Length: 250
Length: 270
Image (tube, rainbow over all chains, first blue to last red; front, side):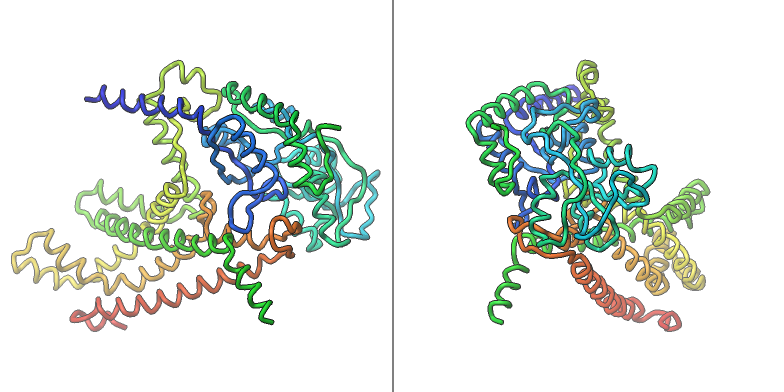
């Protein structure tokens, strides 16, 4: 009896993994517009959602979106709660030690500083400043390495919270992805401006995968190559990033 | 003016807000389920503590003193994780083949087939059980004290009528202890209600998480209404909700108290 039950459980488990070829779960943060956010209906939307759905359609996969907090998004991928991360995650050496990435679907994009308009910061001798970053990002790692000795680096769970604190006057400046800040600065109507130099970190944004999933990686890479070649990816970048780019075709 | 009202009505009834309103069910479910379990654990703990067999008495005492001392936030994070990994460990010991274990790159679970994906429903149940265990320890103390407050004459009389120990416990002691336990239990209930604001720690998209999301400043018209940091307005709604629950609970407990005290022991009804 026990044997039969074990066989049934094993069959279920094996059947489950065989079916996983056809349907995958994609995790996103839902708090990083315009990459990914929750729209007025409360559903995930944005550049990555539309791109992810385009990839799934082209590759013949059934995709389900899952909202997961940023700080636990890699551990939960490793645990097998979902199969792919599409959450504005930059490809870095450090992350490549734990997870795999697809080829990038957003070109390398410089990180930038913003501050409330009129703030003067001497970036050549940066000290005694409160610098906001989102925890677990490439900017957080960069700030910890370069600024932490003489300044206070404040980490936030989401980028939106950092922006709220900058607006409230609790921060001197924020270091974040240029393409995230661009529309914020534009929409702020002059209240927030870019300041200082751009910093190039990371190798662009890609989809995060478990290392033991090479088949899915191959499938997604192949699909992304095709979608870049036929202009779908650039068209989506133009749509979601106010026609700014950066584009793959340049 | 009419346009303004129409705008706000449609803003406050968009899908995001409707999801927020719907998420109140998680909070209410966790409170009711957690409260019921707390009473069950409390009765169990108090009976253990009153037992004449010392190992059982020890179990009851350890439960009520240790769990009462652990912060609820900590227990809230600890118990579901331990439970999840315990189940995964059990499943893994049954279904993981050596090859599957060798192929697994992550530290946990032992093999991919043993992974248990917890959704909102599972987390909500685990959260309710956690609440039940934590506040059951407080209820244990309350009920233990209440059981001892039942006049010994009542118990002696029952025994004199030839009731068995079980009958004395269930029909006389527990039946009468509610009058003494209810004031303390109403306190425990209020603590449980407050603790339901922790649900978002377990990735449940509850009222607090949605208030956070809706209140966060938005700069992009593509995302929705552009607004500054509105979190305090949404938190204020939660304030009002919890105050309302407090008020309703007080009314309810008054009514229960009147009913429990009917026909017995006028001195307990202060």
